[in-house]
Amino acid sequence: MIPLGIAIHGGAGTILRSHMTPELQAQYENALKEALNKGYSLLGQGGTAVDAVAAAVMVLEDFPLFNAGKGSVFNHIGKHEMDAAIMDGSDLSAGAVAGICGVRNPIALAKLVMQRSEHVMLFGKGAEDFALQQKLPVEEETYFFNEQRFQQWQEALAEDRVSLDHNDKKFGTVGAVALDASGNLAAATSTGGMTNKKFGRVGDSPIIGAGTYASNTSCAVSCTGHGELFIRTVMGHDISCLMEYKGLSLHEACDVLVHDKLVKIGGEGGLVAIDRHGNIAMPFNSEGMYRGFKNSDGKMQVAIYKE
Amino acid sequence: MIPLGIAIHGGAGTILRSHMTPELQAQYENALKEALNKGYSLLGQGGTAVDAVAAAVMVLEDFPLFNAGKGSVFNHIGKHEMDAAIMDGSDLSAGAVAGICGVRNPIALAKLVMQRSEHVMLFGKGAEDFALQQKLPVEEETYFFNEQRFQQWQEALAEDRVSLDHNDKKFGTVGAVALDASGNLAAATSTGGMTNKKFGRVGDSPIIGAGTYASNTSCAVSCTGHGELFIRTVMGHDISCLMEYKGLSLHEACDVLVHDKLVKIGGEGGLVAIDRHGNIAMPFNSEGMYRGFKNSDGKMQVAIYKE
Image (cartoon, rainbow over all chains, first blue to last red; front, side):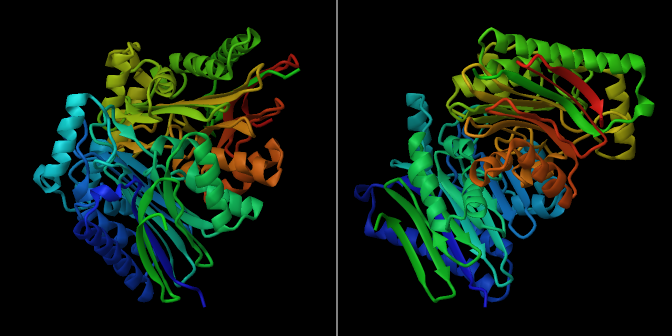
């Protein structure tokens, strides 16, 4: 009997309790629960891990609470430039998009790149053209408009700084990992990047091996944090290799990356991961991480701060 | 006494002897030798591995023979859209650019992204803006024009196909790896992509961990081949992990990737790699690969076909 499981995150960072109200906390927790239930119900019906992670991430993309999809931050020129990636651990197939505007659900586009193109990664206008060809829903700028994000951008513009999500130092990214009834693993990640970002910066989310990785031989991983450092450590794939080549458990491998390697190069963030036995890890070295999991042991949990 | 060494490639694939003349072969060999001598002379003067690989790749980018820099192929809309990446094994710093037009030496831009920006990867117009800000040489379309490449594009357009470099099935990419007198490793890769490519496709070259990777704990790797499969196998980082976590030698690790893992998922291509002891590997599973190395044992070799 193969266990089922899904774990998700909605970004890591210094999430200050002083900025949190009971109402806002309930909104975050409800959004996380909705994403978990959506993904897990697909797994329970015999759906694939790929479909489950894509569905869970789409739920989070549709909430304005998270910096992905609808809630994406403003870049330097007032646009919402998004990245996403998905990987199927059963055959190492993968799809990724970077620097796309207007596409309602970037993770849906990444999935189509994986399933209907010969390529793994498409960027910018070319990726948007592929979205149109595939008839994915495209939204006007107004869909992505959010007064709070707009004010954050105006403040960042005035101070000429590039800032992370929210008033708090938060790495706004959403992601999911899952294990399905066939024993297949998958990972998906989606992000709106950094407020006021310039120069077409690409973070770790759409980089296969860095922010997103899955292999049935080991685990599935979705990261959130200081993207540049996650790229340099090849975070997702390194966890997989520590398990496959060095025999570490999922938790041991995640600890090496998040609490040792990442810390040594000054990196902050976290990740969600699941292995082929259904073990789930949700480590982070920041103050908090929006996170949750649901599995076939009947357990479900959502959390924001450190325990 | 730390040995010095540099290895380079100018692309892998089915390089047909029937399409090769003695004059053309001499041109390729001279270009490879010029790149090796340029990079090695820097190493001999106490220069860094980073400077050596960047200099060697710039020499290859400036020849119209290779599909990188000046010799880049035409994409679907008649532009030359280039990718490049560089990584410093001493501190895992890295820089990458994707989908850039007009920049004379994409590898020089990737190096500046590594050294003068807070980011690892920039794409498209944003990356071009950064090149202008850094006062890198920018060229008109005419600089990249080449009658043979133009005809290849016209034929590909007429047949509505995306094709690899040249008349032969060749993966046109250039790259270099080096070990310097301080024991530091570095890798660099640059490419002009695929003739008639659409949708802003990004291959493995600018993906840290895939086509380009370096770590002083193991090795430096630069790949050339069917980019999508190199991304999915996280080629460069996987070789590094097999050495670091499983204790394989450089040659053993390269063989696992190029002659086993890559073959199993239908991938064709090759790579150059060097470890911290100065061992050099240049494996490929295609008919040929433009390649060469030079080291402090006084050895220098360039080759195109299988031995």
